[in-house]
Length: 149
Image (cartoon, rainbow, N blue to C red; front, side, top):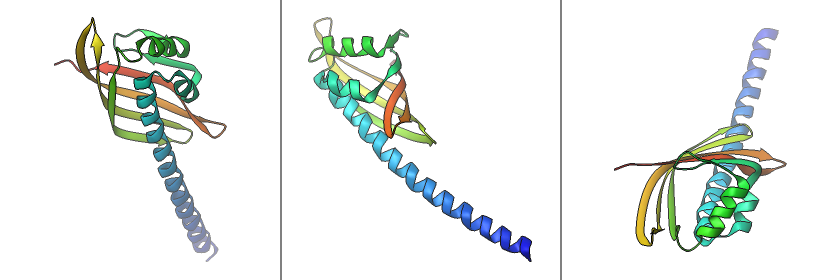
């Protein structure tokens, strides 16, 4: 009899834990999606202050050409390209996967801007990795891959 009671108690605890985790994951998913939107708008406007707040100090960005950028290099490029190279940026998130204090985002993006003095549009895919530090989600690794047509 004790074994059955223990099994029922454990099943109830597991169900409660799963429900709490599910709610926590939904909350994290919403926050991450909002941060991805903040990133798009900040990059469009060259808002280095906003980008600085959402990137971890150790952030690594793998650019479309395969080069590695530190947070400082990415922010400097965003500052210099504001209003020219990136005039409009839109992304659609394919999935957000939460793994405890880590989230992985996969999506598609389209950018319109000026390249070589001429209007230009390009598209690609991205993967961003976020981590929860002191209650704040920060991007630690990001990568962009162009879609060749």
